[in-house]
Amino acid sequence: MLEKAEHLKQKINNFQAANKDELERYRVNFISRKSQIADLFSQLKEVPADQKKLAGKALNDLKNLAQERFQYLIEQLDEETQTHEGDHADLTLPPVPDKIGTAHPLTIIRRRIIQIFERIGFNVSEGPEIVDDWHNFTALNFPENHPAREMQDTFFIEKDPDIALRTHTSSVQIQVMENQQPPIRTLSPGRVYRNEAISARAHCIFHQVEGLYVDENVSFVDLKQTLFHFAREMFGKDIKIRFRPSYFPFTEPSAEIDISCLICHGKGCNICKYTGWVEIAGSGMVDPSVLDNCNIDSVKYTGFAFGMGIERVAMLKYQIKDLRLFTENDVRFLRQFNF
Ligand code: PHE
Image 1 (tube, rainbow, N blue to C red):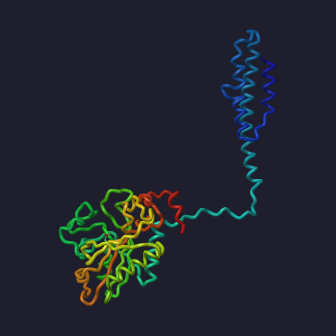
Image 2: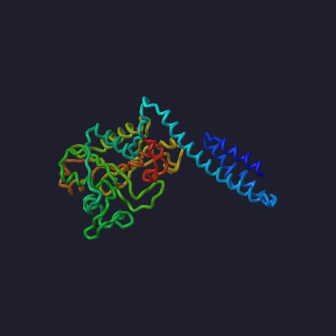
Image 3: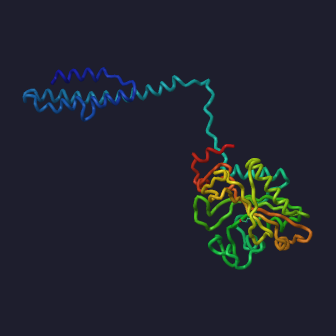
C-alpha cells in the first residue's frame, strides 16, 4: 500500500498538462471518485490494524498533494494560453473589420422605389400616421357606411370626432392636394395599420407607397405606362404586368395591378395563390369629387393615383415567402440584404 502511494506521488509530481485534455486526464486519474487514489482508499479496510494509521495518513497526504498539484496545473495552463496568445499577436496585421449592419430589406426596397420614380419627376412627401376621418376616408369619397370605416379594419384612437391610425397612404394624397395646386407628381411612402390577423400574407402593420400625378391631360395611358416602367425597372424587362378592373371610392375607373409571380414563374405557389399573378398595387384615375374636395379644378385637371405594398414588392424581389420575417428582426434573415 505504502509503495503504491509512493509510486502515485511520483506520478503526480511529474505530471504536466499542456492542454485541457491532459488536465482532464489528470483529473480522472487522481481526483475523481474513480481515481487511483480513491481505489487505494477503498483497499484501506484490508490493511492489518497495526499499519492502518500509517497507511491512512499516507493516503490523506497523497490526496492533498493531488489537489494541490491540480490547482497548480490549472493555473499554469491558464498562464500559458494567455502568454501564447500574446506571443502570437502580430501587430502588423490589418485589423479585423467590425461587422457593420445592413439596411432592412424594406428600407432597401423603399429607397429603390423612390429612386425609380424620382427619375421620372416624382418628389417625396410624407404625412402623419395618426389621421382624422376627413383625410383617411371622407375626402377620399368613402360613403358614410362603407365597411372599411368599421372597427374590424381601422384602429381608432378616438371616436367623435374620429381619429385613427391611417389604413392607407391615400390620406397623404389629400394632404398634398390641399396644400398644392397642380402640377403634382409625388410619392408618399409610409407605414399603415389595419386590424387584421397576422399570417404569412397579412400583417396589421405594413408599408405602402402612394403615387399621385395630377396635371392637365393626365390619362389612364399615363398610369399604365408609368407602372409598366416601374415594374421593368424593379424586376427586369421580362416582367409581365396586368390591370384588373376594381373599385376604390376615390378613383374612377379603378384597377388592381398584378405582376407575374417571380417566386414560381407562373407554376403556382402559395404567394400567388396558384394563379401565377401577384397583386402589388391598387390604382386608378383620381375621382373628380376628390379633386373638388381639395379645391382643385376637376374640369381643368385630371390625375392618376396608385398605392403599392412595399412588403409585396420586397417579397417578390427577394423571394420571401413569409411576411412575418420582416418584423421578427432575426439577424440571420436581415444580414442577407446588403445590396
Ligand atoms: N389605398 C388603396 C389601398 O390601400 C390603394 C389605392 C391607392 C388605390 C391609390 C387607388 C389609388 O388599398
